[in-house]
View: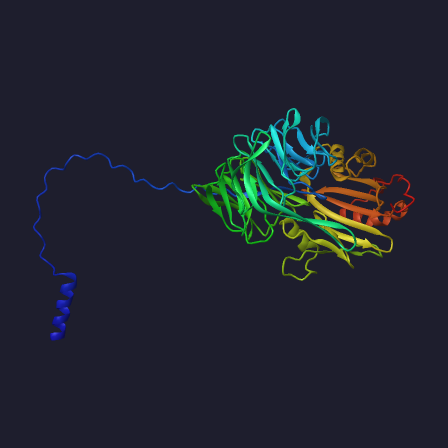
Length: 547
């Protein structure tokens, strides 16, 4: 009884005692409604993320410049070719060394022979001035001037007319200066200082020298002088927004940030880059969007109130170049053999799976593909895996055979070797949208123009033989250099893909011996037995010597 009573008292202490209900209070007439309550104020919702998809990708046989995109994002120059950017259609071959596409469509380029030139895409020269090739390049926000680093000098030139307006000698420095422009059109540079150069001689008599600099300064071009703005000793790399209002800086140790210009105030920090090699990064024109490499691959982010919002990601991609279009809605990823283009809101395209099956003649063996990722055995890969990795912008891979290797051709499907007779066969399949011409002959000429050595198009076009609609053959004969050969190519458009079979033989190889090769590698796999379509034309004489 006592235990029950104590429990009851404890409950009363915790929860209180129940009271009898209070008497009802009489209600008067209802009061008139008061003023409406203001709605609750909510924090603005994050902008919805729009999906990014691949717009197109294009092959290259060795680009020496990153993709160069026009200010209106209508054209992109890559690997001596100009493409429109909506579908990636090939437009025209262009001069080597294009550095900028000007607002009126003209191209600024260096001819690798000591001249800067401004001309039309077809190569017609408008103006030219002396100047060395330079990978250190920037164009002003208004597109009227550009800056380079040439022969130990920071050089600023006007474009119309094309002439030098400043050349400032900075001496022998290492690393090379970085140049850019501020929003007020002033040229700026990050320049090493306090440099010492050591000269040495090797045992064989050859000389070498090494330059080390103890400091760096962020400077601005004022007339024919450099004026220091602030110390920049810890800055390793910079990418400027085209408008000149912001930049990405990478500091020693891998710290990265987007900063305001010209003052250098931090707008937002980016994840650290722990790799020894400085990876690429880019801003759109106004510095509102950023693209860079992180530990997973490539990421595109919007800068919103000093924070980052992820827009797109390409896991596993490790390009050497990144370029954002002016509006930040298109990203160009590139290395020296391929350009991949992603676009915000781009509808996903269903690309057909390439297929090819052939029974090689006696004497042929597969030329195997290998594409090991870091940590994988060197012989990792086969044709299908390496093609998939190539399309995902991963390890580009190689064709390997008994100590010989070569870069994997873009769109690789299969390759075969007849080592005894020095015959090579390469089968590829790429996006057919690169060549949208409706007229079959114009379509064939466009493919030839984009595929052969510059200057040889007209001669090769004369060898074209059509195989009906969207299929043709052509021949190309290499006689210069140390690797002369006869090349016979068959092209077919099937299910949105452009297939090419390329048969390479020694100079003046008997064409009657090619018929079995066409049958095995072309006619039977593609169901096209039109022997008259083979591009058998009389080849030029073989060279007398090896080179």
